[in-house]
Amino acid sequence: MHDVSQLGLSRRDLEYHLRWMMRRMPSDPSKMAEFIGQVVVTLIEKNNAAIAKSLAEQDRADMPEAS
Image (cartoon, rainbow, N blue to C red; front, side, top):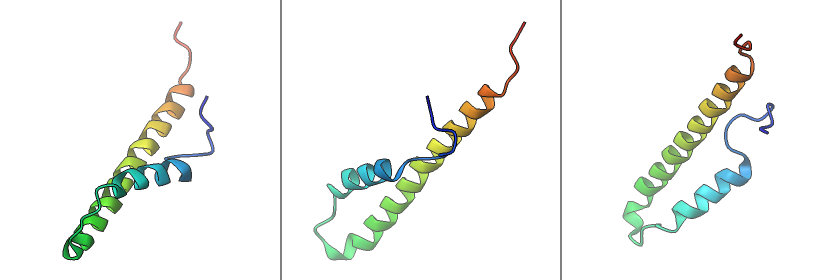
């Protein structure tokens, strides 16, 4: 069962996704800024999706039982 106090990805999950994305780091230094921007945006999107999922699960838990 999910811990209700945590919304979004844990630090461990964020670090896992970051390590995965860093495997494709560009060799050209001029492309590093664009790469870092893509990594940040991707991590934010993944965290936002996890937050939305957590909130949706909380909403369902508060729903009254259907008779």
